[in-house]
Image (cartoon, rainbow, N blue to C red; front, side):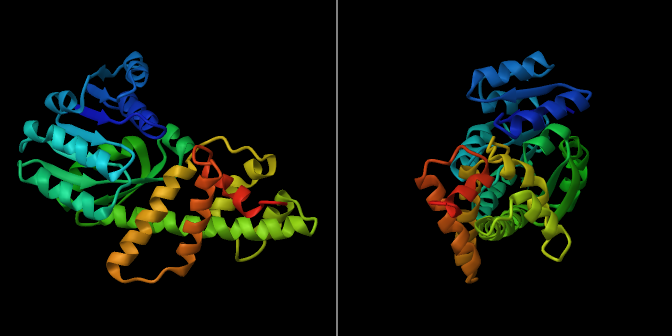
Amino acid sequence: MKIGFIGLGIMGESMAENIVKKHDDDVYVFDFVKEKVDLLVSKGAKGCSSSKEVAENVDVIISMVPKSEHSMSVYKEVLPVLDASKTCIDMSTIDPSVSVEISKMVKETGAQFIDAPVVKSKPAAIAGKLGIYVGGEEKTYEAMKPILLYMGENVIRMGDNGKGLVMKICHNALVSQIQNGVNETATLAKANGIDILTYAEAISYGGAGNWYLDSKKDVLSKEDYTTAFSIENEHKDVHICMNLAKECGVDMPGEENAVRVYDKALEMGLGKEDFCATMKVVRQGR
């Protein structure tokens, strides 16, 4: 079974590399940045000059691109070469409604389609220990699960097409609110002479302990905002969340506040920094 991977960004590069390492058949790759393709070729992949060329050569097409319009563009490009022998896996984080639209378009060719967005960040992508939420038919999920396990250690089907993305958006929205709570209370603690590491240890003794703080306390203490998951990516996700909430008639005042923090972070020029740099928004002037 030949696999193709389209989109070699911060996450996609490591995800594709894990497939190359673990899969016993050809892996074809494409990205608009030729150096990224060349790097994967040096590790055993076969390079392509377009998404369509990838799709022509493989049985399974995996995409990992930034936004809804990019996913739509990929699948419109590959549509002419899809048929019942092929399966598409979009691992991008995009609007669920757009993903459902893409799934219908793909399935009209006879090909299968699942959405399979990921959680966690670059270190987990490198280690092949991502969490993966899947939306799509159960038989397609079961057939593709071994491939998904090249990239992740926890894979769960959430329901029909689009439901993997719904879960991803719920996950990242919750992280944004936990993060904002950490930012605000850690700033209050600092204003009263309690440093971030002491704060984090004390938090772990009670019911407010959380994975975000445990994983970020050291970089927050060092003010090291090297990007594992960028502010601009989480900014996209919190806005997708608010669009989804609006579509569903769900009120999310806590998430509205998180959106304001992310909007301000972009205004401050922090978009390329790690998403924990939202701490700078809360600590303005301190």
